[in-house]
Length: 604
Ligand SMILES: Cc1cc2nc3c(=O)[nH]c(=O)nc-3n(C[C@H](O)[C@H](O)[C@H](O)COP(=O)(O)OP(=O)(O)OC[C@H]3O[C@@H](n4cnc5c(N)ncnc54)[C@H](O)[C@@H]3O)c2cc1C
Image (cartoon, rainbow, N blue to C red; front, side, top):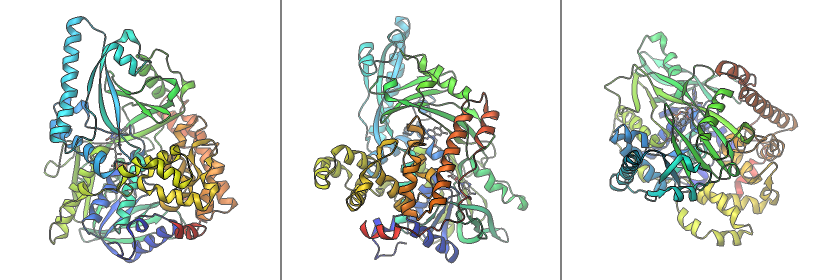
């Protein structure tokens, strides 16, 4: 529980000082629930448990969302595909979540994005059938959202003629379509939403520590009673023990590693997770002319072309992956496949020269062994392979809250006492409260703070009503109001704030996940690295050696990624990517908590 004298905003600030304090708590306290994994599932579970009044800790080996949760298609969606497969329960569940996120939980982070379903050219009878088939599907989607979806939060669909479709999306090849249907889904920045979940959990008293890798379980007889943790920011320090009544492993494609840690007991893990790689390309908005996204059918799945600020995101692939899970690599073959698919409908074909960024993620797919008694839906599962340990895996980003509530329901039953139901459907994340009014009054806010409306809009859409904290920092230190070198759409203050309040510990955290500079610029962040390291270093107390090492590491990572993307297949791409070591574990001489963080604390 949060100390009552501390405001919720202050408690939700993941500063270097806070990390030191939370590390101490991990060593000293016993938790009701300890969550392993700071992806969307783990951060959601920590928030669910903390909001029920439990004593909670969250440990993440690398950074928030460093795994799959920063590498998705960034859609909060019901899944038109599920509708086609008549998985109505899943569509209903996901559309309910979409409505909640867009209207109550995170309206500052989840926005409607229009998407066209192009209707391909065909003979007249086929045309009628296609329009009826897709039209019915999209109408059912809206009906599910409106009637059963708990607040739609999205505009309704519309049928378009060929001219209408080309008006919205001039780059569509006219001879390829007879018309289109426009529908809406939710779009979000996946990594930012996870940070926001973790901060909201922290604001309710959870101890939240990144760069904290779980290396094993503590056991008493046949019960798990905690975990062993290595602080990757202090690699010379010995591992330490964290005690908890229940451990929840929300480790996505690393779930089997958790079971493996208990292999000597000879138990069945209860679920197995396999990894399927999905690659996305990012191209500049000018490469394609269109005001909506596209969903295209491919031989095996679907391909999205989605507007993303000044860019387009194009993806994805779907192939088995058994190589390095921390840094899944996109090969030249993946990139070729995506370009070939999207070029079937574009009037000006895209080439590799158009590509700004490429990212690859791993879907955590349940495979075999899922224990039917504890399986909560076709999509995700919660199992208890050993007393005191719960594994939760599968599902999709959109339904993180359902997964979180399911696993914490089981934890609460185990803990005994009065069963407290999940309240996260009623709980706005930090920055969500008052968002609609702040957006309405954004011009006033800009005038009051002496910045442009564009700056306020940019900040509101990324920080919600927490924007006032960034504006206060800019007023206190005018150089923080400057654009970031090489990435002028971001401001220096965002880098400082990431280190001061959003738990960013390394340059990579800021350039890859707090901002998306690593995929949104052709230089992939290399031209922003020096400036960002200076700003970040001032908050975290970096000396010249640490600053140089952070930059060097980032440049090496980008170089390795670029090289991997020229390799013909997964094996060679993986070999090239793992040439650059992970920055975590290399930072032993860093002293978190030192530096300007203490000074800026006062001003927020
Ligand atoms: C290409 C692609 C596109 C997708 N698009 C969408 C979409 O548009 N919409 C949607 O709803 N879903 C989408 N998904 C699915 C969604 O992204 C995932 O289901 C979701 O992000 C999984 O989150 P997670 O928290 O379970 O796993 P992760 O995000 O991988 O989190 C697991 C975390 O556990 C940590 N961890 C592992 N081992 C340890 C340890 N020993 N100690 C401490 N921490 C540890 C990892 O570092 C990691 O951060 C997509 C997935 C992919 C791959």
